[in-house]
Length: 237
Ligand code: SF4
Ligand code: FES
Image (cartoon, rainbow, N blue to C red; front, side, top):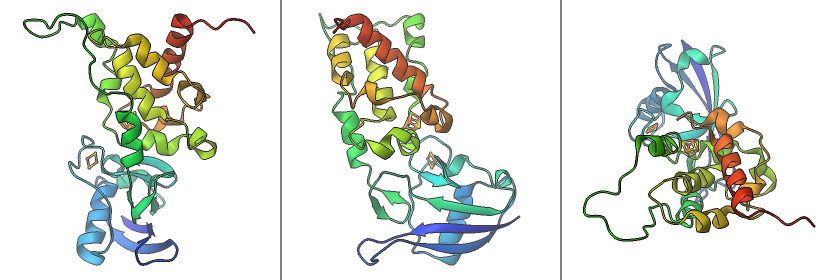
């Protein structure tokens, strides 16, 4: 297939403003958008910057916006862009470091602030902390998160409220709130119980639509809200 790529280019150290650059690529229908980017970089323009590592939807490093939809370039097939035109841009809301590479620091810091590790209470067990298969099932979905940030880049709430902690942070909050081995249940709920926390989500479902690991992101956020309401019932005004 003959493909035409229009790619966002911006090097803040050199360019005064972003621009778009076009590249023609010949690709097989079964190849991925990431293969095309690699071909552009290796055969046409070595200055094009983007992140990639595993190439198989595991590392989460090649999140970008492809024809307006946040996705992993390694999971998108050429055959699904039948018009042959592909617009590739960096994830929205993130500072551009260069071309398709964005600064993930603030995103990751938002997750670090939620203490993304088990908080233990009680005596240290002799062996592992036991978790039943039923309890493990409660976090089975969210544990798949690979921190690609596609959900955050796709979230319409972020358009108007950059203080929102974002869907990915809430997925990580969920992952520990509902882990039977964690001792910080109430503290963790308090940690997301504020207007720019879980309550900023208004159920657009875009995060769920774009998540490459099929995590029910919006449903998880709603489960957190219900838990907050149950544990900290509001008094009527
Ligand atoms: Fe990526 Fe899904 Fe995790 Fe969001 S929840 S960071 S879209 S894997
Ligand atoms: Fe690792 Fe795409 S390159 S997820």
